Image (cartoon, rainbow, N blue to C red):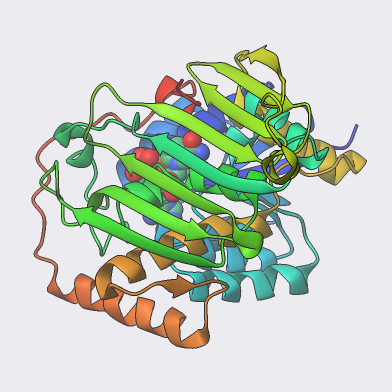
Length: 392
Ligand SMILES: NC(=O)c1ccc[n+]([C@@H]2O[C@H](COP(=O)([O-])OP(=O)(O)OC[C@H]3O[C@@H](n4cnc5c(N)ncnc54)[C@H](O)[C@@H]3O)[C@@H](O)[C@H]2O)c1
């Protein structure tokens, strides 16, 4: 049976789990063919743990080895586009960790290389596999919600301690990471938001930098978005509140979806609200019927890997195409630019706004003081952490 020969680049928190999962045969259609990390200590550990799997110090050496046909990129965000470009040039299929990169302009360059290669490109938006988000998508796509009116997502249960931020030198810095909660934790939610509700036409935002932690990047953000056709959305996220909330509410002309605490409720109206509003003439309000769905646990990361293999080998539709990554990144880039300039930012991004975003980001990078990181977290795991799954 055909299998993909996978090389994993960046074997930290998440890369070590992707490697272990594939090595232990849990992903049908994938075999672990090579490993790569720039850290010599990691490489030593990998050689001891997986004596039969070749370990490389750079992704280019790994690509040149001819041992792989597929690459998973789980290095820090800013390395996703350059490593992916090299991998596409070498004729590999690529699965990138989220986010697609740090800025839209660089990601678009990577897409050009991906398209040229004709290879398969996926992104680890594991939360797309959640059954409740899929039910919401089905209701919206079937037209049962009616014309979209409003989305409100309060996603404040991404709590992180100072020790988390101190655990890696690249984390939560403009130079190392390129952003905070919007670039690290919230990409999953921003992606699901646009997957359900489409892309906004404009973004206004306030991003509070270092509000709850000793970090230069934002750990608290509120976005307001407007859509074609008049719908609006509010998105609130932080890593500094405990207990947090995960409540997604989407209303349309024919009803309302609320997902909270692992339950999706859908109320549908007996007639569209806009029609009722202008034809009511003293009649009682439209009747409501309620549907309720409970969440069930899924291993989202494993489903994305299995789906990727099934797509390449058997043509199964891809759950998370790599080309989708630019959507949520456009929203977060626009949120930063709005917060830094006080402007409403139009999407898709104009070339001027892409340039201004990069120049302001580079200013932040240049002015950033070196950050002392004191705590070292064990960045090798053998199973997907609970905090990476959807938390209700
Ligand atoms: N989908 C998810 O649920 C999820 C969860 C965690 C992390 N992530 C993403 O995975 C990426 C890595 O995060 P992490 O927490 O595992 O980071 P980490 O710091 O624990 O691990 C990164 C690893 O990459 C190595 N590395 C750095 N530069 C490299 C390069 N150029 N080539 C090869 N190796 C290199 C480092 O030595 C380190 O071992 C981030 O983009 C993050 O957003 C996704």
